[in-house]
Length: 276
Ligand SMILES: C[S@@+](CC[C@H](N)C(=O)[O-])C[C@H]1O[C@@H](n2cnc3c(N)ncnc32)[C@H](O)[C@@H]1O
Image (cartoon, rainbow, N blue to C red; front, side, top):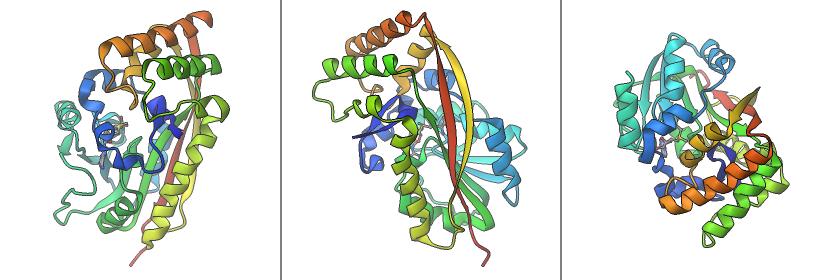
């Protein structure tokens, strides 16, 4: 098993997009999701906008609209595609135009875009079918740019999560232990390779590049525990089991002085649709 650390816990390998129950579970608490999940570096948004031929952006798996609102603020016209109606409803209420569908099944109805982006969502999309769809709807010179947060909580916090998760959910298909032994970036590289391979398999794109943006965020115990239930492995836990997980992780943060600083690298895997 491998981790997708944006979920603070593993997603099933090798094909997370096949786990539809988890893929479309984030709307269980859309308000918490929107309130607690980090936004994306402004420099990443600016670079994608500057490297796209125009302002029309499709945000795949827009969720509650965290990334979409950033692209709107950067001057783009954004359409979101989102399969979970609860997430889509939140995004619509925050002023975004959203169509409810998986990207694979969504009907573009002849519309084309200057950029196709996806914030922490492309791992839930079939990487080849997704790249093929992006290729159909991107204008010549248009940019495909899915991006993910890679983050690494302190080892004690990861160990506490691993230990309590194994105890509370002994029959889980997820094994968090890899998080203890490998760096978050190592754990993510197979995902980034798979995204790039999907783009290459479809053809008609430039060679995929990785763009990386480093930053960090300090969380109090309560702030970290507030966002933890939004992770894919925890969205479906019953309240008593979730409370046990939060207690265990909270105790680890208390032991570290009540707050943690978490380094993040936000990585885009990006390519341009060739002219013609
Ligand atoms: C981790 S959330 C990210 C939401 C948002 N992009 C953000 O940055 O906060 C992943 C989103 O992808 C959506 N999703 C899952 N499978 C999808 C698919 N096949 N096509 C499009 N979106 C999908 C989920 O419903 C969820 O809202």
